[in-house]
Image 1 (tube, one colour):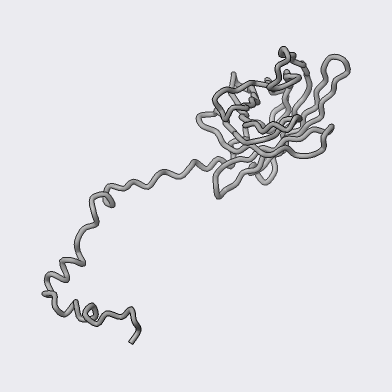
Image 2 (cartoon, rainbow, N blue to C red):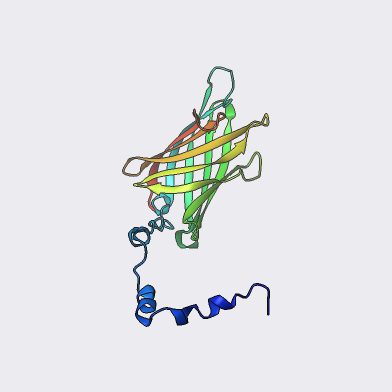
Length: 202
């Protein structure tokens, strides 16, 4: 006989009146279980970026030295952003080309991917000068406001939190704002602001 077998337990059901045994089987679940509410699933946002498909005039300014002790110096650029739908909207690719004073030129892209399991988007950035993708920021949209967060490192090796927001300003006008935090999110410094105005439909 196995050491964990208890013969007194084997015949317990024979000692209980049939009515009591049936009543035990029909007892309602505890009140806490009855009142438990299953939290709603995040909305299916696989088409949240459909609004952006098309061509846009881009006006942007970039902080020359983010999170530094130097006085803020903003570099201004103007150019074009083109967004193409991929996988029927579950991904998209943004291509940016812009010029600034002093012959400055930016060629960049953003790859956005929708994860149907987490129901979140990941946004990946790159520019032609560097040729690699940054660590992604993750998030989604609430009432038209996009909020995405992640982590990255500055050129000097400091770890920072990254926040990227998409804000509707008017019909066919959107603002994109990137901010860094070096103190765990207690304070944020904007370092990249772009305003896009649609020039061609999707």
